Length: 366
Ligand SMILES: NC(=O)c1ccc[n+]([C@@H]2O[C@H](COP(=O)([O-])OP(=O)(O)OC[C@H]3O[C@@H](n4cnc5c(N)ncnc54)[C@H](O)[C@@H]3O)[C@@H](O)[C@H]2O)c1
Image (cartoon, rainbow, N blue to C red; front, side, top):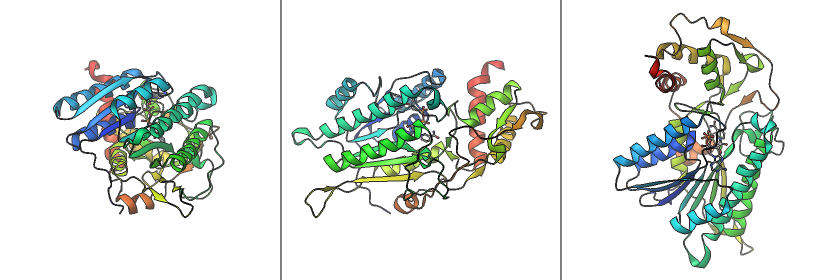
């Protein structure tokens, strides 16, 4: 295990993408478990998917923040690609820890909407790096740890399973993946040049209540409920590491508290305090089984009727461009260094998702 070198208590933490799925859950976790804690969050509330889910998440954060008056929570609606806003936040709040989760996510959307990936994932991330760099100006203590979201997509069509951070990942198969790999390269350069301790996290498919509607399990749910037929890609032979969101934020919280050490090399220059981890379940599930448990849990939660004919609502189809048949994380480094091991079973996680879905979309029907 690596020693914690950052105490989150009383720290100013800046998180981007806080109205997002992982971001909102991380904020709630921090508010509930670190006392006191001071968090500033930004999100541009874009309409890539249903904004009411983002608003719902922010409301939940607000309610939890109200329970802990000794802590502080501030939300800024803004774009990380806007340098002025980012600089203002750094100048005013002087964060010690920065967690960059804001990004344009999604592989398929990047095929038709490349601009927003360049804006949010490259320019936005560059602004964060620049702000971290200048946080040390005039002898200020500055940022102690920058943690940022990368993605399992960087592995492209890697043949070797499980995916390891030691694998060469120079063959992205989508612009989304290319931006995430670029983030890792940019972070490395900034860590080397300005001694910014940075940790990249390659997330593997995260799911849970108030998750992203653009992800397969959510889309399947919408379709099954509407009585449509769902398409299961690669004839159901896709394997994914599905990781429940509570497990993911527990992992992120552990990682935040352990910044890579600053060291000086033989040349007298900083050895970049830089590291990248996979964060996932390391237990790939077959898509067909996943969908089967999902439909059972949707019936249990009352989203689908008891007598739902699942067999007649599924169609097995080939792969989509940009998709990869199997993503499966080698997470031994995360377990070794942080004792991180996801513990939520697929059934429990999908049960919570189904119950949330029922409450969010179907309350008024009863
Ligand atoms: N959820 C997953 O399975 C998964 C897998 C791999 C990587 N990731 C990465 O993890 C991070 C969080 O993912 P998520 O699932 O919570 O996605 P999400 O889309 O729910 O959250 C991202 C949030 O960032 C905001 N945002 C986007 N561009 C912005 C900008 N320019 N300025 C300010 N806010 C902006 C969005 O409004 C959104 O609320 C992302 O970087 C994503 O690429 C997620």
